[in-house]
Amino acid sequence: MHARAGVALNWKHHFRRLTADCEMLALALPDERDLLAEIARVAPEEATVKIIVTRGAGGRGYTPLRQPPTRVVAAFAPPNYPDSLRREGVRIRRCALVLSEQARVAGAKTLNRLENVLARGEWTDTDVREGLLGDAAGRLIEGTMSNVFLVKGGKAATPALKRCGVVGAQRERVRELLAGERIECTERDIAFEELVAADEVFLTGSLIGAWPVSEFGERRWIPGPVTRRVQALIDRQDAQTLEERDAQAR
Image (cartoon, rainbow, N blue to C red; front, side, top):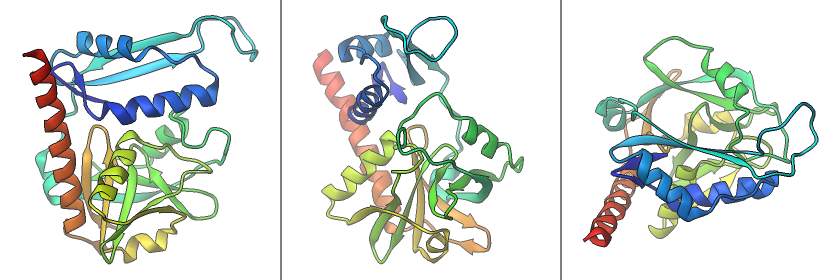
């Protein structure tokens, strides 16, 4: 997640996902107050913060442990993305790797990101900023590090993630923000062919915010009004979060 001055941005959706994933995997959920205090301690300035919860230390075998879980809260330098990516958009490609389906853990962000790592290794062209992943049926699912939104006729859509993929915290915030603006946003199966026909395409992630897509194969776009509105809404909410923190500190 993105943190500034010890404050985790979009915390509500990050903690909501952590709660859901711990429940799915039968892990004990860390106390929210402990996590917030640890984030403030490890990220006093702008940083990328990662929270990892594991079942705990144990020996060999697959039998679930029955002991307190282990948690790690770590801070790293924020990514140095050029402003042009947000302003002008990014070039993307389709990955050859096909995501496997497992409804039992679909949507969860587990440490098993091997498919994403392999997919990201498919290209070395630094002009390509993201690769899109699909399932065996040819449905668009996500990017290697992002979620995807399409806009057609002023209405947005994002792929359903009931079979595979990760429900990103930024994805959920954007859906909520669009609803607040009375901009329709459906969650449904999307074929790759719909991507080319879209009026706008943008990617979301906790560290990228919302990136407009400018190029996919032969298709070109310029950043559209819905994408620009999403960027503005994210910026406004983040600014409000920091203002509230400053007010509490005073």
